[in-house]
Image 1 (cartoon, helix red, strand yellow):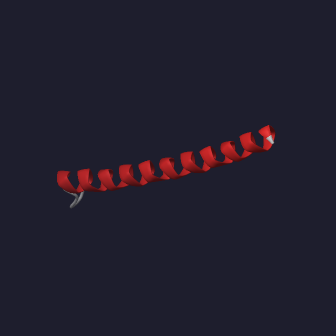
Image 2 (cartoon, helix red, strand yellow):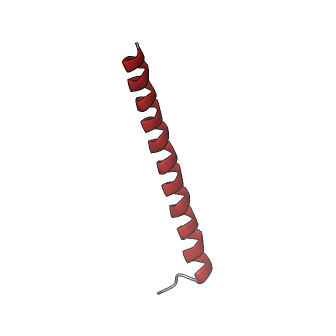
Length: 44
């Protein structure tokens, strides 16, 4: 694995996981807002 140590791989893996988690959170919030808009449109 070249000059990458176990700690480095864990570190970068954690950063990637954090990024994925943030992306998922943002996407779910956007979808939730869109769904709420559609629901209010249907009710109105």
